[in-house]
Length: 451
Image (cartoon, rainbow, N blue to C red):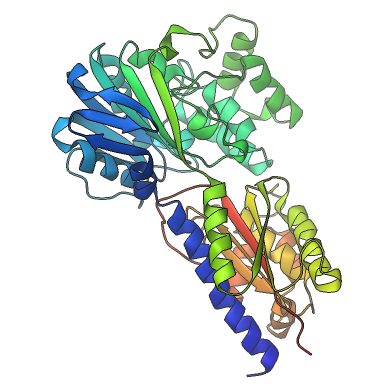
């Protein structure tokens, strides 16, 4: 093996180790236990306390890819006090629990299982009283899993609208604005149903900026979005006439004030609500940086708020990596450049892939022939788009290896077929369900040029 190939092989092992460290830092079970503790009959949550003697019943509810281990942590703390509980998770993301029921549902497009599980959660919330404590667990994926279509809107209608928005590259903020206004559970409505019970929400963030009303579509916090904005989003993407007519009618009625909007700040429903953010993308990035340092790299976290078209974002990131090689700016090699956030993909082809794989393919094209740089793009939830991959790994030799196999990178990118491109090269990042979710992690390892 040549020195260059040996160096890249070593960098690949290091990149995987760094990514793993980031995942471990946002383990949901550990995240709960860092913020929640019990001493006798007092539950301490980030400095505030809940006297358990004041509550007749404790319920655990929630939805998201990471809520199963979150619920397990609470079972360990509150086992004998949990009256009932149910959390909806993505298929394959469950865990065996004793007191909280695991319910699987479809993601990212909601399905009938999610509707049934959500109805059970709404029943728990509606039956909670003034002397009850409802602990609500929310993580990324909660928007698709906590699904209760508004009156006059069917699940099929919501599925069609969700698919259309995903295909046009809508941001998670835009997607969740629509979801909140087509739901009986999102946008603060779950809190409204549970009032006057005490609600404690524990949240693992998967959105840029950690906006509480966007994470899981904010079922227990005030909603800042409106029916008018929902209509504007669909019209702005030119798909208003492409979504089902019942959705057009419902949103238009809401925009005219004929349907009450989602609960806003100051509403009675939030007087007995407390919310704690237990895990973020920044925590994963900081841990990844520490691990990179152990491998001899200078870590530099450049942003946790990355958004935009995946293939275009990758070009910018690789330009920075090349600058590190040529001028030692903004940091000298060996360096580990870290970015966090969540990009989008506007579908033009019929291929298979996800935003991280498309990012990696675009990055590989930008690095063609460039030695000493390796890039890894991965979803912290272990799933990238409709695939079994979390992302992919690429370097300066990826394009030459592809050409040797007769693969046309531009053709794969044109068809949004990044999954099959990297599958042919055995460069997919496969982790399986991680049961956490704090958006995506992008890293570029830049080695020092060898004399």
